[in-house]
Length: 165
Image (cartoon, rainbow, N blue to C red):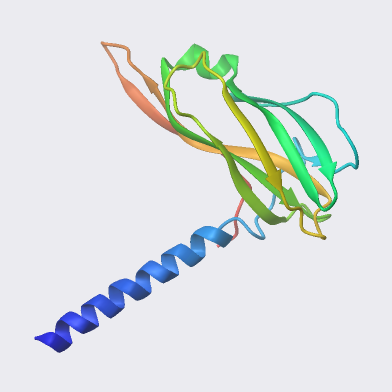
């Protein structure tokens, strides 16, 4: 009985380690869409905007030696406000991309704490660009909810680089 319990615990521990390992490299090598990809530049960048149907990101960048400081705010675009009444657990991601539009590193940079589509999620991060990074882009994934009493619904939405399987 002790051997069975040991084997079960060892297998569960191994699966946990494998699961943790894949989450840190999940998007590496994925192909980013060229639309919305921005060239990395040196020095201060004025206020910029990245936007799609559901999400808007207003941000500023600053090169700080080998680091890249980014501050900004995540808000919700007209499309999400027209279709839904609230948001649930939306994560904003940053992708460093090489010359072939392949993800070489990525970070979760913001996460909604409010369910209101009128609220902004402010972020301020220091990122470490890999030497092969020439571009960056944003991405997201989360859930939007429509509380219509006659037809409530929720949808999982995302904009992420495409992985090959």
